[in-house]
Length: 163
Image 1 (cartoon, rainbow, N blue to C red):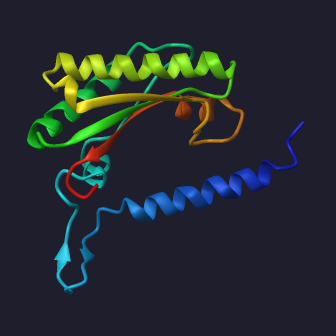
Image 2: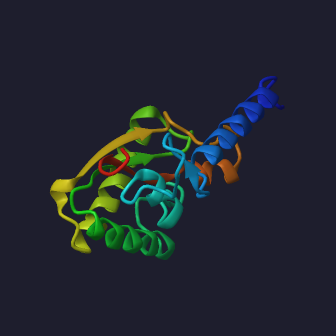
């Protein structure tokens, strides 16, 4: 049986997606002086647009797949260009399971991501980790497609250009 709020959830997710898409546009923007500028080098927006800020995991797993490793290799190269940037790795899980289980799983995902970046030469002191478990889903439907989007680790620039 469908939730009576399913339509509202879809509308809210669609609206959030459109807002995020508008914020992460790679088109040139006009600043207050009237000149045109592209993405700020070293910013979260540049990371998202040019490198990718997230890796995904299989159900109940914290092991990186080949696609995730490739994304993290690009992130490591990007981070080498911006040695002053610090960032947080956020671990997330889908809605299934208890809050405690998902917090622990999100923590393992963030730690696995950090360990891989460190193995690629990123200074561990630049990286903090946090787990949000199932508390911050990007997709609200109870489907495998949505769950797969919520099983992730996200790199967030904390101290860098444009942050």
